[in-house]
Length: 396
Image (cartoon, rainbow, N blue to C red; front, side):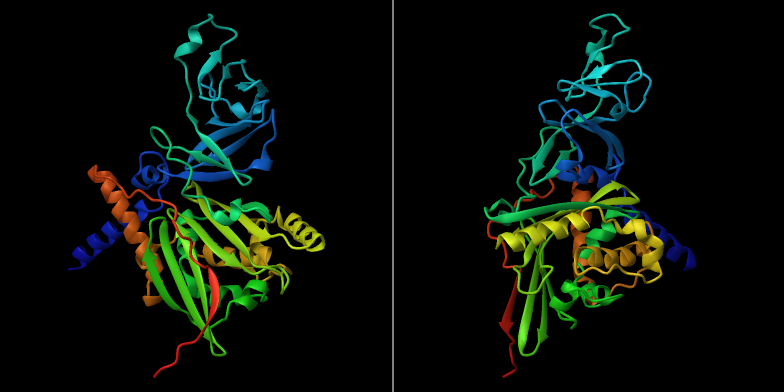
């Protein structure tokens, strides 16, 4: 009997481990490579410059040609495997600083100065398509032609008269913990009340919500209804597969319009995640807009991981919104470990969103492994109203 239980636990652990493995050739890594991934701020690399990045377990060089166009290639020269991002840009091409081998944006070697001319034609390194959207750089790392860049788009980000703010943080834990947290509406009533209560904690009532989850063409619609003072507070997340959380959040100051926020939990590798955020704030007055920009600039470089010891000692930032909510989530998620032991969890009925997400991922992985088509995820035709108050229903 004990042997049977032990065998079952081993099988469960192996199955759960699949969910967090992001490198090429793994089931989850293969599934993730079917999507566009935001991995860098557009402002992080200027024309004629390059930088090292890591995405889905691969070390890459992001560079802009002299035209300003962005390119993404493997960060190893095919010659002696030194880092390519340490080289320099010539036109739209990247030259290795070690022996001068030069590559174009498709990964093709175009010159080997110390070798016979023409011998470079058979040498190529990996390269991936990129797409810039609203100040973020996305990459497609899958096989064949990339899908049309449509699933990550949100109407609000493309409207006139909105202020767009981008930021990123890098945290030392699996991307899946972030994704599951975004489908866990109950944590808002607790985690975002710890340390100090900011604009978000005040705006969302602390009552335990009634929850509903529905698979959509784009991902999962999460609905959390909280009742307070005779009103029902309805908060919806139009969550986009495989890890995009699209919600509305309060402004820094009461009375200013709420913002729409998209947060992508992008796997750097199995143990690290880039949290890419894009906020759209309606423009109001020149003074208010300037205050929004000033606050965004103050928060731009905040990374909770830089304050790990202070946060786990209960020292939260004196901030009304962005830094505070980030710090509260950081303690909850990194506190689970680099990869949470899902076999030892004790899930409850309030974890239906997490259970649904795992079922969907396993369905997609199983389809890939069986050689059958996975779901063709599509942007929602009609976005949900993400936040509203309704008169609470009363019993007859």
